[in-house]
Length: 349
Picture 1 (spheres, rainbow, N blue to C red):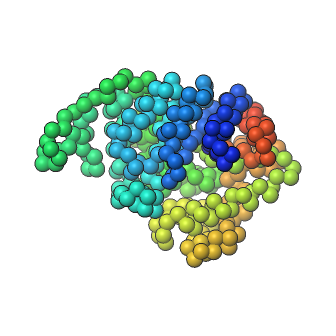
Picture 2 (picture 1 turned 45 degrees about the vertical axis):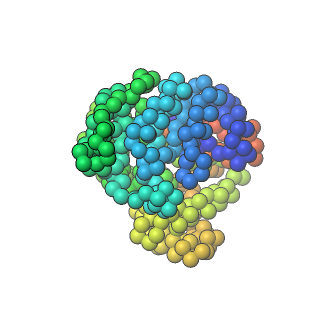
Picture 3 (picture 1 turned 90 degrees about the vertical axis):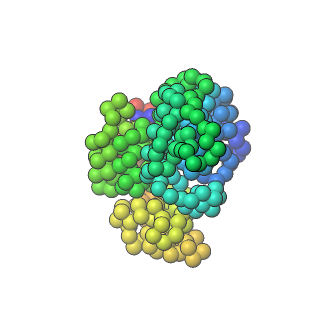
């Protein structure tokens, strides 16, 4: 099981990246850089590539609507080049609020677009002369569109790898099925190992039945906050605001994927209450309604024995990369957590 970490830089980006060298020495395998509607992730990933030697780097995630498929491919090839083959392209559909509100692009056909984006990226990395005639993307533009001067081109540079790993963030049944079919890795959010087979098992099985064996096994990236000790249970409460934001505020009624997931986990009543309160501006009340069991089951927070049990449950459910958020008062404490969870994961092998 690989150990990853999402980059957090509340203390300053450059300072955090300098600390990454310590995490690299401690055995951290991969670092994920989010984009959302903050600074772009690409410039930061390039900086990290220059400051590290072994650590894998991943976008976590780049929205497919914010760039053309070809630019996504060029960006991935460029980051793989400057990192000497250490880059993973993490992509996802994001949601209507960000895509339409921040990027001003219609949020349409996330499944079809994701499939075509991945297909186009792989053509670019193989340095094929790019010809793609899909439902959502066409290269070159067909006759009657544009100037008519477009012609098939291939990437000028030879990529370090023509099979750069593609990781897709997905939680909906059809999205997960597509991911299991065509992607190298899958990153769900709010991952509860005991409920994974029930919620996602049929989708994963259907997708894997059509999977090209050349892709290898699907890398399953589980996320979890991490704190180890006999007095750390209170840290579970830190997860309430974010859970409430996603379950309650990331989308309108009937258009919130995270709310749907909470319902599929079995917390229908709580999901409805959280959404009603959040959309009514009562964010603290909404956070208070997040089920404690959800916070506990998707976390690695507790005594060493408890964390070992939760880690084993993660692995048993199929997690192959564990993306943790270490919670401690200082860098030394966070570093110790990475070292400890790396040791625990090795004990499971």
